[in-house]
Length: 131
Ligand code: CDP
Image (cartoon, rainbow, N blue to C red):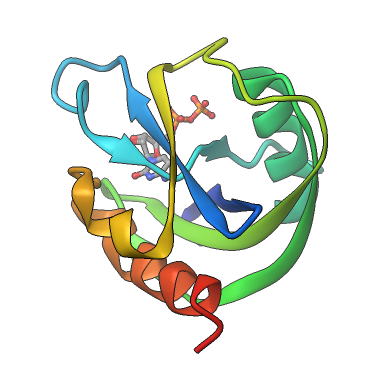
């Protein structure tokens, strides 16, 4: 069976990357992630990402590019990441998170990212710096 896909967004705005601090479950609370969630049946990855960012942050967004690769999560799940532009709205903590931070390229290592998000965060930061 194929692994289920969790999608997450490296949301870029004004040269900064959005980081979201998880409020649950207890074993992940306090760690920072690229916001996102599980792809539901019948959805593309991009559609799921737009829906998740609407539900969790109250924003309309547009996926830009998939960051190559995918990373294992718990058994049966893999993480895929897109860079994302904001279309409208200011991100707010509506669901799953209790803090948000906009990180400039030299601040990207200042938060305690989930281990599985780190490779994509590093690549997102590289793109943010225009490297
Ligand atoms: O919102 P939904 O229930 O669809 O998904 P979620 O609980 O936000 O994420 C599903 C799983 O993916 C959780 O185990 C998260 O820890 C994991 N995840 C992750 O490792 N990295 C992310 N950037 C987003 C989710």
